[in-house]
Picture (spheres, helix red, strand yellow):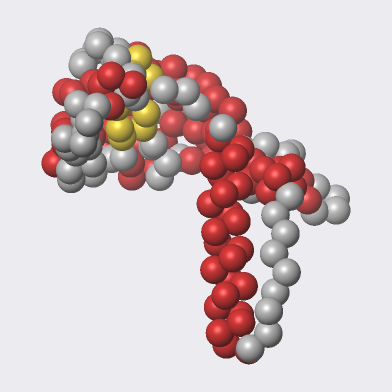
Length: 174
């Protein structure tokens, strides 16, 4: 299902590009979107890194992606991103662990990447201490990206989706 939907979105982009080309040049375009190649490109985009150079500058695979997992909170799960050194420092402050900012394994991105599994374990230890709602508020106040991991049922009650009128009640004609 994901592959079908993702390829559909790529197809829409290709058709729009072909229409724009026709509008600008008067010439048509052939649009072809093979699913395997489309998904291979989609998956590999983060993982190519320096592995495509000859000789390779780095191994293939984004190390941060392989270790990243949603973190369990007291009452659910949270997905977050702490990428920059500034974001990590802010997280340690709002988590009540300013001492971690001086930890050489985590202070700079290069060292975090070398110790990424331990970094994520330390963050997960902190996130387990509060509820998802508490952490969402903390992350928002510190301008850190995070979102709750929903169940199908909780998604129906998401405050943002409710606020933007995502779900609408209508009377069925029969």
